[in-house]
View 1: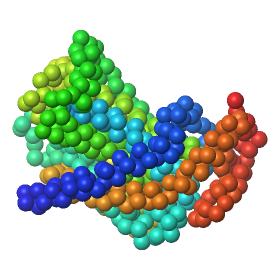
View 2: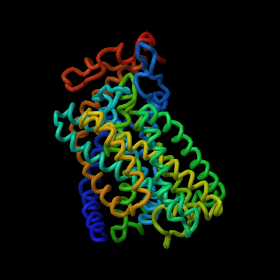
View 3: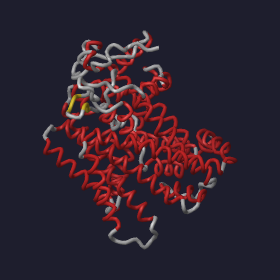
View 4: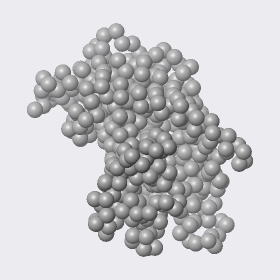
Length: 488
């Protein structure tokens, strides 16, 4: 098993280092320039759109989940244990300077997040719960390559609802069991696995609307808890905060780091961990973005861009500051979640382990729900057969149960490599379709300049095929919203 794990690590690392990451950086920079730095220029629009009313049907019901609910579904998947363990690994391996490059990656990647989620909205389709879509859909409809869409869908199903959800379950089990000390009852992992599968089943069998209602409660709660925890620790060590900021920037560019190509390693570590965390360009978040009922595709593209900032600039930065103000000497620091956990308990005492267990549970369980929805959307892309969807739900529940019992090393290595292929397929697609996204952005900007609340209909993109919804203004805005288009 060790040999298999080492082989998976080796080929996965080469795929990310030499193919995926350079392509991510190149496309992020290209999208940034081509869009006129949309990820910075339209930040006010991101917050305004997040509060938009959800278009309704003739009987007054929401057409689908709201823009905010779709944001929380994607945030639920993005913001997971990786925000605690991944940042700890990045700092232990690349030093404080890696944090700076995580920030840079988030800013550049936000442009990719805008493109992929705008495309997901444009090419979405209707289902019984509202809307669904994602890379598989815009690959088929925009590029006319169903085989490529099916390939993406299969890889995503393997990675997110199966592999990554089992790993989140494994982390919950390990954290809860560890809080009881070394003498843990043999039945405890089984009980935790069964409880997680039961909780997950109660949510996912209610469809996307129930998933959205749960995540819109869990995501703000876990973010607030973690933010408060980080603020308390920073206040305790407030005298170290200026040095911490200085260290992040000096070790990102410092002359000592350039010697021996260490600078390149720091950059690579920060960029890689940042991408794993915020998922910009990977093709996962657009599956949630497509589910929202909005009046213009660009609106949800902007909201999903905000999700990248929420993940990296807020949650990941909290972890970084917790570590850097509490552990001034990183020379012998352990990697992963142990570094973050040690920093928290060192600053607040052993009682904080209980709070950390609660936060990790919220992070990991919300990720399980987000991952599940990504898989469901792609199962429905492959086949509409309800029996297949039921089988998927049972298999996803079984993966969570099993994840609480098995070793995670090989699963991590396999999933990281498979996710590299998934990202590669998506990056090729959004690169080819980016011109359509920029035409959408131009249409949105023109309407805002005219003082309108932007509304898109498919006749506004003549020559673009494969658009199923967006038939007319009435179907987009809902019968109660058509008269009120003007905004200041």
